[in-house]
Image (cartoon, rainbow, N blue to C red; front, side, top):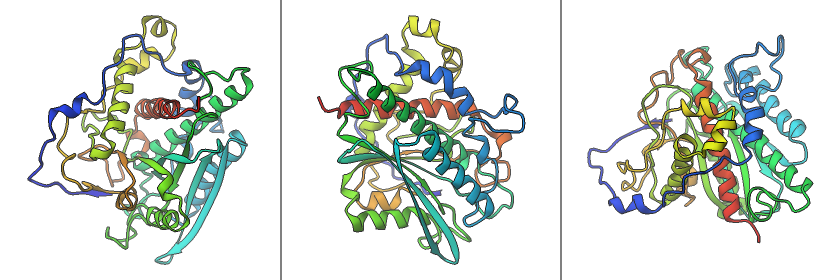
Length: 365
């Protein structure tokens, strides 16, 4: 991806900050016991508990180069597909979409929650790495985001199974959320986000351009209510923050921000006292700032990334990418030694709760 800034950035009125009312103190994380039991193991830089094996770790298999068409790309792709087909069997429909362009073989992965929804929120990240510099494993770009999305899929599958196994199919509210929502979830792992030689319209975002064209042709695109694209997350650097880029998704950005505030500052005392997550969650930095309006009035993408063809097709985009980019971006230092697994877990929790609240809002009563 790349970005460009305008010297003439017009701020939106402060009333935008009032779109989302603050929630009452005493909020609790949905299915906190599940996260407490599984999140640290799933997204960890430590494999000491599984000598000679990565066990249930969703992050460590990405610690390799993933150039399109390479052995590393194939291995990671098979790992993702195996997770959905085996660990999450029956909950997600798995599509592998191979194609060839510019002499390279690419494969997009599209996973669809099987809840008979008529419209979708799409969660996405790219799994490929740059050819140069040689040996770059793309820890923030975008191994951490991919692992977070795999965990989100695992969490959603758990909730769906729980709902079907529970007599009245309840979460913490009335009725089923995942299995009873008119809104569904698609998770996309794009191949070929990086340029093969030099970034340009014909040499970048290969998988995104391919999937957008397919969804426009087969009629899927109008059913996409939101694309949440994750990229360059997990650096652990104090700066930069993740701003809101698009006015038509600012309300969803505010929801994500309220979830982050709730997670960090407004959890109930009883939940915090009993939760193994409480201590590590409290150490996380704020990553979102809904009062930063610098990019909302531009009416165009500030960062070129996989969302671009979907934005052009009229899909609201929530782009979770820090700006300016982390210091390790597109260098060999973008490795797992410079990755903060705790921040990757933080984003996994945010997106899990974002999905639950989005589906709950559209649940069929």
